[in-house]
Length: 107
Image (tube, rainbow, N blue to C red; front, top):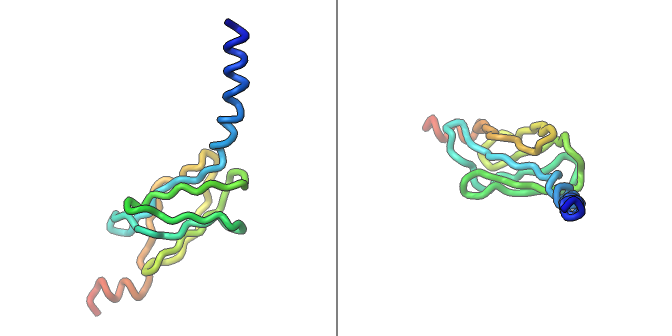
């Protein structure tokens, strides 16, 4: 029984290692609405992802934890955030840029 348990533990080690370099989160606007197709990229890498209809993204990288991610979307200010170990950025609120504010205010 001990040999089986030990073998299963050894087999699980590589599986745990593969999922460690993933950043996840949700991008919303100031009203709490999800932002579709916002670009999320890890600073100084070519790793890039886009949000889905719910504003959710998942980004895999070869780079270790403590990432700086850059988020941009048309109509919003470009923002940068740090993601610490654990890989979850949580909910990130993007602010409207000046052009979008003018449209919303009707001026």
